[in-house]
Image (cartoon, rainbow, N blue to C red; front, side, top):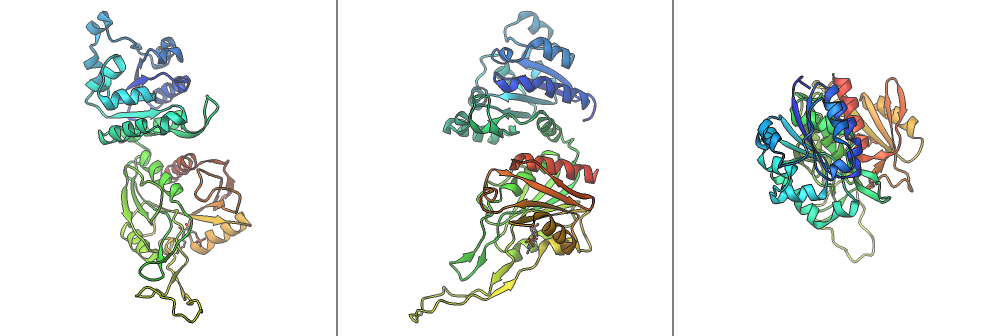
Length: 396
Ligand code: C5P
């Protein structure tokens, strides 16, 4: 971070506020200046003294502190920053922001600011999934507010699901990206994702169970580190990633054309579950012919996009392939690395019972020329964040 970038950090009330000292420490260590504002509820979880000591700045708590208005009015406070961050951002703070309320210092600052705003929501999973919160989130995004997290996992209240505040390191990465200063700023990265659909006739197609979630999470994680991401996706069920250029395709051949059109790029992450074969498709809908004999489908091999990119004259500096295996994970992944000519393979076991294909979590092994690194079972977002950090290190 360029030294002297100023962050106004609004601390909402929630158990995640106990992670705030760590966040302040990370921002300060990265060279940023932090001024904290504590909501009344936030002050129940973290003390003003802790935040003042770590930030080296006065912590603001009340709107109608007259001496404070003399020293620095709330309007000035909100404008003196380069970025306003709300962490943890409670459901109530989101509602206030979406509704334009200004009845305490935090909400007044958020309404008065002319600077970019980043929120790190944290709340119970039911509150996060409530239609009112969904509505507020859509409104905030439409207003240009950036959002980091929430992560998936066990909550302090004992429930499980999305709602945990993003980890401080991830919030710091989002801060740097919002300031245009991530480690991948200025890098172009291609990500392929989702299944492909291969037509059988004009109304039917062959497909696979890929949801596109892992590829989507990777595209978002790379964008959060500042990369310009070109996201080429087949017809996936996962919502499209934010902050990236999306190119929608259907077939493997369309995906290949879109991927090659994106070159040159600094790195390519080929997370798509591309169909290996397409059907020699009929131009008209195939009808039952009354003979009782089913039609035979003739399959033709599809282009291998990963192999083509890995051997292209404009080969990206780093090419990452994926290997979804149901057995002999490492041996198969190593063979694939050699066969395709890519630099890394992210291998995962998608055997029955793992719940990985289409699920929320992933357990991958990263295969590089140096060896195999098994990663713990993590949410797809955390797996993506970890891979994005590794890519940033490799391109540094
Ligand atoms: O050979 P296999 O399909 O297991 O290899 C998987 C890897 O190759 C993934 O990274 C996938 O995106 C890529 N691939 C591709 N084009 C194909 C088949 C696979 O880019 N036709």
